[in-house]
Length: 288
Ligand code: ADP
Ligand code: MG
Image (cartoon, rainbow, N blue to C red):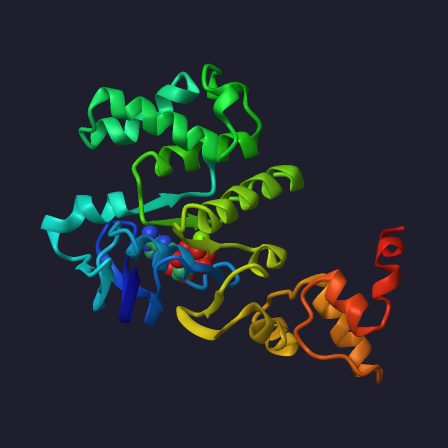
């Protein structure tokens, strides 16, 4: 679905007069491969190059060096630009900057309308997209009246209505409360599970990454660590050196293991920890 080969991105830095005074290397030799239908998480501290990478995956930026392909199309091919942007949709952090319609259903219809989809089909797509994210009953509402999580789900519906093969989400939950975060992640997982849409989720919340098929951890523009969630989160100390957390349960299991309790590395859920400790029978009681 997506492939990058030795991707490099340099930003130009300008002085007060607007002259180019240097460059910042934001992405530094990233090669990755994403298969159709995968759920990918990208982790990394602020400034590690995640957003810059994301913008290459739907041709919002062009490579300084190296190359990016989306569904076999090279992103520096101007003739393919609109096909690439339709196939690889993008969701940003702030839902307020992505919603332009006065009414939810109208907002979701803008994308397909711009693609030249016939009117009758636009309405079918709007209905399908809003039902997919659980926002159908809000179709006549003004987006201003929605919660952050609801707005972000409307943004996602707007992308779904363009029938993308892939959705890149750049910290879609960063501005949401825990309830909103949960709604958005549930919608993203359903799109992947049910609609088989490839998802690339950039996030700061480690718990959101445990369901991914594969995690890429970025540091200084490079991929510092990658693997399944279990593989990546088994590297507790390396993650901490990269200024990242691991899920709380993983950390607890890691500390217990260091104090001599024989537990495997890379435990991801409460249930796994309870089972490894031989407490599976009392898992109901552990929340109390
Ligand atoms: P992240 O999303 O992981 O926080 P970014 O991709 O936004 O990282 O930024 C990577 C690096 O590129 C940072 O050092 C950042 O300051 C720099 N950068 C990002 N955008 C620009 C820009 N438009 N001009 C110059 N430097 C930029
Ligand atoms: Mg960013």
